Length: 396
Image (cartoon, rainbow, N blue to C red):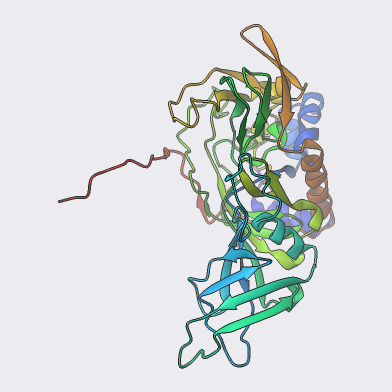
């Protein structure tokens, strides 16, 4: 048994033994579980891919004279102004003003909220245009100016839902090409797309949320942030394998960090033809090896993780809950799966290569003593299921 305090002491003294989730499996096979649990202090996990439920809070400071922004746009992308006078929230999926969206299907969605966030982190100069109805204390009615991230008082990434524990493999059983947040899907199961780092993914290495919880320190696109809540749509009660691996989406995390410390390599705007825009993010989370049980869970392999294959041509949009089959991430990573005797080409919306790079960057920071671990302030719920939106009559 180890404690957080003991592990942090070893990190601070430069003596911590840190391995990535990609390395730990073979290490345990070689050393044995008990010996490895004594020796290893931290296992780093990571993921990189589109995370639509992301965004940021920006504070511009007050102009002279002052303005209470009631409508505002950054690079012609609308931001939410229902906060204080010069605070706004920019969502990753917000479209640019004038974008025809899917009026001429499939839309191209060349630029939106995710791209603004990418440009902001990259240090580019961006245009702010804001309007106001004017008040006695905030008399200015219009402002147009240019700014960079360094001109802002705060640029705080505030993401309601990141790091899905597991996720669908998308196929299309219809007779026409469809355009989804899982990419373009050809008719009659000609291709399949998935989005997960599998055995590297944080919550798959901590399936019962024993070390990752509210207050856990995370590496968010290079910045040091933390989990501030369970993510939206968190469903800890998802059906699991005997080893605890969920067979569906299950857990999610709400993450925050200072954008001024982020690395542009891991913050990328995404255009999804026929669907919209999003933001691809890199997330790394360390798992303290408190005991043999925690270590054993970090030894999960792609072959042990099953993802549900779902038809996005009918079953997904109609929310039938029907699953075609389940396939392992080991199969998915070969680039081809077989369903009902047919071989299907597979593409990935996430990058295992970048996830592995993140896991190694985080491991290096911990070894240098630059990243300490934090004990959760509260644990994520294990018994919640996701509710549906039900169409109801107005109560009498």
